[in-house]
Amino acid sequence: MTDQYAVIGNPISHTRSPLIHGSFASATGQELEYTAIETSVESFARTVLAFRDTGGRGMNVTAPFKLQAFDMSDERSARAQQAGAVNALKFEAGRILADNFDGVGLLQDIRRNLGVEVTGKRIVVLGAGGAARGVIPQFLAQRPSELIIVNRTVAKAQELAAQYSAENSVRAVGYTEVDRQPFHIVINATSASLRGELPPISQTVFAQAHLAYELAYGKGLTPFLRLAQAEGVAHLADGVGMLVEQAAEAFAWWRGIRPDTRGMIEALTIPLR
Ligand code: NDP
Image (cartoon, rainbow, N blue to C red; front, side, top):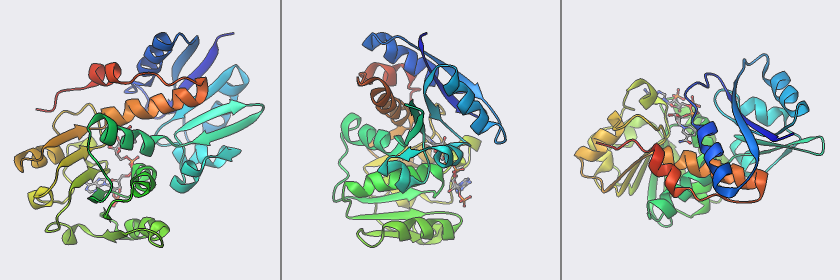
């Protein structure tokens, strides 16, 4: 039987993962089938186990199931443990292995694809939800000079910063404190853009920025990116590169071969203008 893989989420109709993994499989000569599965919170664990028991070898996990996937896994990578959430599962010898490639994917996109260095830079991450949890430890591993986490619900940002503050220059603040500080890299890890909203920042947050990165993808110029453009930020990017890079990491974990990502990023990119 052909090896089975799937992405699981709710909703799932928007997913690009079957397209991405199908293309990776063709490019690397791997024989596999990759589908999309929609389920409910109540049925999540049952659906994962049924998939595994009928030939499933691995899954990508997307909203809102990243915490449930964490809870039901038997072994978690250090990255998954740090994030407290997983976005990829592998079924091996009766065990469920879990990892989180969101942060690795983002850092690969920023450093390798966009050619922007993180070490020694001042970074601000807007948002303290699931995506922020995955990307913050990966930023810190690159030793920025300072990382500021900003969130509407400040307590969530504070809780996240406290996890890392012993060894790193990381702080949590509210939106009112962030505007006049100079940042090199501004990351929008809020879900505001999914509703066409702007987090409560003003243009001054981009005054010294070299890169404005929007984690949402496929939306063109979001209000966040539009503001950065107005301030003349050199690099504007959305999360399509992160999406493809995290997929390539999962593919390599499952199949032992890392596909080239450049063509797929180009194919999925919606021009930012
Ligand atoms: P969560 O629901 O876990 O977190 C949402 C975050 O956004 C919270 O910090 C919330 O603040 C904040 N927020 C929501 N609306 C606003 C607003 N109007 N103004 C300010 N803050 C707001 O979402 P995720 O972390 O899972 O996802 C965040 C984004 O990342 C989404 O756009 C998602 O599509 C994208 N993403 C992209 C990936 C990729 O591969 N490119 C992978 C994963 C996610 P509060 O806590 O105060 O409510």
